Amino acid sequence: MNSLETIDQSAMLPESLRADFPILSGDIINGHPLVFLDNAASTQRPRQVIDAIARVYERDYANVHRGIHTLSERSTEQYEEAREKVARFIGTANPQEVIFTQGTTGSINLVARSWGETNLRPGDEILTTVMEHHSNLVPWQQVTAKTGATLRHVPMTEDGQLDMEAFGELLNEQTKLVAVTSMSNTLGTVNPIAEIIAQAHAVGALVLVDAAQSVPHLPTDVAAWDCDFLAFSGHKMLGPSGVGILYGKEALLDAMPPFLGGGSMINEVCLDGFTPAELPAKFEAGTPPIVPAIAMSAAIDYLSAIGLEEIHRHEQALVKYAYEGLSQIDGLRILGPAPEYRSSLVSFAFEKIHAHEFAQVLNDQFGVAVRAGHHCTQPLHKLLGISASTRASFYLYNRPEEVDRLLEGITAVQKMFAPRGRKRRAQ
Ligand code: PLP
Image 1 (cartoon, rainbow, N blue to C red):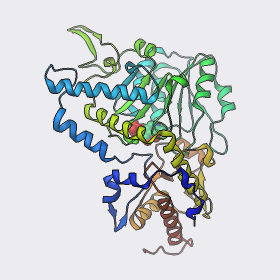
Image 2: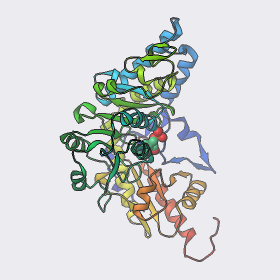
Image 3: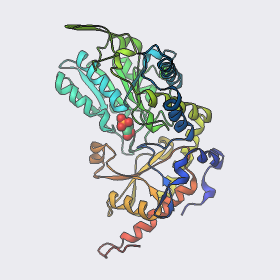
Image 4: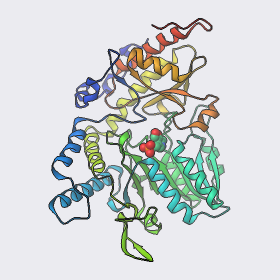
């Protein structure tokens, strides 16, 4: 078992911040305190975000951009301030480049449908990778099937990093867009986004970054990266579900047709046609996620007060600690690269125990909540020769003791399932 001595204590954020998260002290599973290690799927919310939601509903709520009454003005102001905050958080000075969507999936579909269907022709290529979440695969499968463009995939190296040599070879004049994750939600691999963008731009291709897993954990700078499109979700960064962001360069968004039609996205409508509104309203048809957007800005305040560098250091120390502990367990295969090439999560598989059974016992008997399944990366799991894996994913509130609890649980559950052939006993 790991010893707390081996973790970099200087990288740890103060344990006191756990008190900000009511669910972490309130939820007991079968008498065990909750060890929440499913943060890559969705994180928990601090009191500050929960309060922001209650405050808007109690004091300021009305529909935005539509009324001239006080409440509408207040909620509009807060909604637009949230946009400005998101813009600053990801490194753009221009809030018009920030579109509120329902989440990462909504953002990627917006680009695939609006930009893709307008710009792609037979012979054009979209380049994505074998480690993408289904959200950054299926929309491109759909749009290439519709337009006759070709979808190609960058392979990975043996240790689960993007094969940059193959990437260079696959890029060519026909490549119109590279759609790539900044961090794999299954392998934990952090991809060299600035380098990918520079290489793609050199052949005239645009780049869409699926940043669902990196924005909550690592500093983001769309301007420094010269990023064309960036997609991420509020619920993976302490914010509410139902809100996400599409960042796009203004000139690109300006040239794209609206994706959804309806209220708010128009300048003028007559019975036989319409003119679209300016950015960002053009891409925000209907009533937007008003309260989730405002609460997402409270989450950004919370993260910014701690600092993304500090959060990353904390998670790196936890991941390294977990990786070392997991490496010592027989019959367990860690997926993905060494700790220095990954961030905030580690997935693993057992030869003889199915991930679902494993996670169920870990939850029921140890109070440890992990993810089991294909994590919406079925093609990647097929490449790895497995149908499912177990994923432990960390955030700023997780502690080394929780990693110990995970390791302890794994060892105990393994014993329960072994030796092969013997009837499994309930503990
Ligand atoms: N992309 C990645 C890398 C993810 O991890 C996820 C969610 O797990 C998504 C996209 C989809 O995010 P959402 O369900 O919030 O749209």
